[in-house]
Length: 193
Image 1: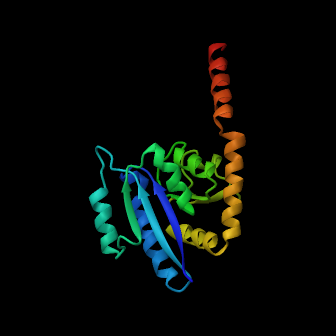
Image 2: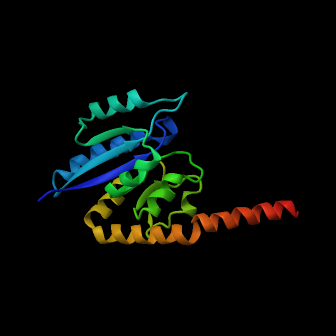
Image 3: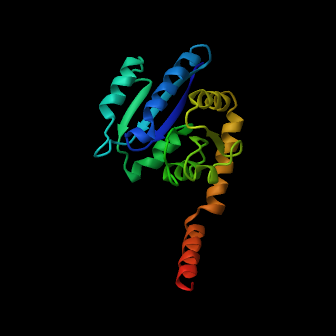
């Protein structure tokens, strides 16, 4: 009885987001899943940047790796009304970027109770607690991504625990009420300095 594991990446289809790395990971996971009782499905949500649109390159890369349209889905831009449904149908969110600030994608995924596996760039290590709400990976270690994905696949309890812990982190550290207080305090500090 086979089940599907759905991986999700959301972001602009530009080189710094390293969607190509996500496609490589899917290809490797497809090979591994032949020996186990699951099928890997990858969803890519986002459209190309104005100056760095990699859409055609990414489509070709997926084709060259024999990732057909039952394994990888290029969704294009997903509207605000449908994004929560997309998160809710997926199991793990992946962030393969080489550069980030504080990515909303990670905050959104955690608020939906999903574990996140992400590169250790930008402010990400201040959001994800490695081994508690997800995993943080060296930006150049594709193999670690695969190891951590495998760990979450074979251990659905850990996947659920990471998701619940991530949701709590969002509620207590990144909710609208908390973030508003932080911003107001920062403005007050600047105003009274």
